[in-house]
Amino acid sequence: MVITRATEYAVRTVIYLAQQPKNDIVLKKDICRTQEVTPAFLTKILQPLIKAGIVSSQRGVGGGFLLAKDPGEINMLDVLQAEEGQLKLNHCLVDTSACHRDGYCSAHEVWHDAQREMAEVLKRYSIADLVRREKEKLDFLKNRT
Image (cartoon, rainbow, N blue to C red; front, side, top):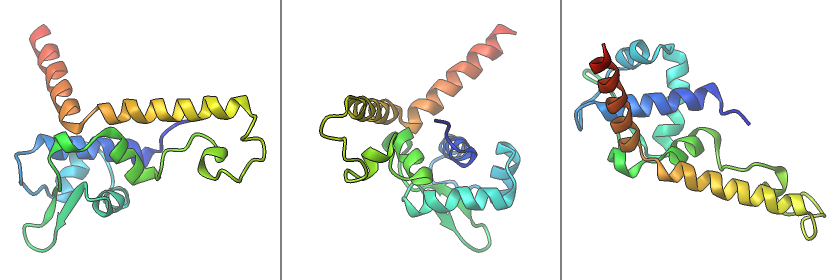
């Protein structure tokens, strides 16, 4: 399983917005430039994030985008699910009537456990955590040179 490019860019965009001063509106062109994404693709990425209440948009002169929540209240699972929908590793986990083997299939239990564990790991990492980690890594690299 590989996340989509849209999800990868959504995570990067949310981290970038979280790095800005609180309540600062960020211009679309600045997001595009710093995240190396086209305006059309950024629009596609931002729509589900806005719908999920992760990002807010401001229209008009001085308009742009900002986080709708505190970065500590947004986790990786939130962003992934905003872009890709509910986390489901197999069809039998999406629709319990999809497979008549659910009652005895030993693989079903593995898919269920793996999905649950993956969701827990993604929930553990807030955007605030990722901002902090990135800053620490950049500081480390800067001090090495």
